[in-house]
Amino acid sequence: VSERLWLEARPLPGIPELTEGADLAGAIVAAAADASESLSREQVLVVAQKAVSKVEGRLRSLHDVEPSPEASKLASELEKDPRLVQLALEESTEVVRAQRGVLITRTRHGHVCANAGIDRSNVPGEDVVSLLPEDPDRSARRLRAALKRQLGDAPPAVVVSDSFGRAWRLGQVEVAIGCAGLEPLDDRRGQLDAVGRELTVTVEAVADAAASAAGLVRDKEGREAVVVVRGLERHVTESDGPGAGALVRPEAEDLFR
Amino acid sequence: VSERLWLEARPLPGIPELTEGADLAGAIVAAAADASESLSREQVLVVAQKAVSKVEGRLRSLHDVEPSPEASKLASELEKDPRLVQLALEESTEVVRAQRGVLITRTRHGHVCANAGIDRSNVPGEDVVSLLPEDPDRSARRLRAALKRQLGDAPPAVVVSDSFGRAWRLGQVEVAIGCAGLEPLDDRRGQLDAVGRELTVTVEAVADAAASAAGLVRDKEGREAVVVVRGLERHVTESDGPGAGALVRPEAEDLFR
Figure (spheres, each protein chain N blue to C red):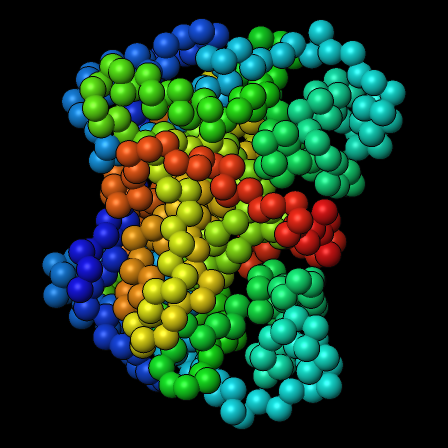
């Protein structure tokens, strides 16, 4: 009988409002100390994309954006702000759907989502929007490395998460757009089920599920940059691993372009 | 400052192997008593689809299935068992994609998934497969009603979950295909974010995220029918509510048929 599993998720209180160049790792270590939370490889820190984008200076004022004719045309069809559409196109390699007021693109990282992940909520300043980090897996690796420097040898794993819609389901869930030190996928193909038959298509998207669990406890008013998830130590790795890029279905296997 | 949120998920040990007509509520109540787990409206029970299907007699022997010419043709193109394809077509209202060895359909309940949710793992008997429950929201309501009869006034909420793939992401996560007593969606549109701006597209798929969290602790060898999730009491309702049907994007809004 395998060890019984468990999962716990709690937001980390006390992360201040973040601005470009802020020491996110330092803020996390300080907040954890204040909360008597001992950070180690027992935890996965699920960090909101917006916090990472703010620290990395990935905010843009729409006042500075000049929409192209293509963006203006698309914006008019979708009844969207042409400057937002311009930014979304700049951040994307492909428009997947542009219909019924919805713009779904494939970002440079390969993630398929609305408006290339650009949004306005929880961003200070009139007409300021946040873009996704330039490379969220790199962001996760850098944060984990900075945590390791400040904490010593066994830093927690890091997931950078954003809320995505789904093709056929209403509502959003958080998914992993960046990941370091956590297996993004738990591949159980080849193992046997309870009746001794080989499990066929059981590859669990661990990092996405961890992000979704974190989303359930994250204050949507946006003050909580970090959720601490415990109970996933069996998926935590010493190396940073393949990152959330491994969660992107290759374009050649995409049946819904 | 709102109350700090938290989430916990643990499998409920001691649910025996289930067969058609078994008293699932009774098995849950007995297992909870053995585990000193006091069931109340503080919990959400995330019950594996397969457990519900077994109790409801939704197993089929492929030996008894006669594939139609349409199923045989599709199966040959996809290199699948024609009897499995036959069952998938019977359970579906629409073939969404049939390409590259993948059959994605819309089930009678509206869920879009591979093979209409039919699979072979953790099902006893040669060539026996499990179908999704006929009406997983009804299954959830019935189980909650039975728990209420056995427990008294304040039963836990019930989610029936299955592992689904995603259009653009690798790996599977558990999602809610049935739900009773839990808000499936938490609609925060109209609320203000931390900088006083209206949250625009924040509708969280609570029941799906709860299912995904449960999936992280469920023993994939299939012996664990029930995961107890705590910390979602603010989403638990006295009435059964709209069910997981509310998570299905209406066909008229589906951009990926």
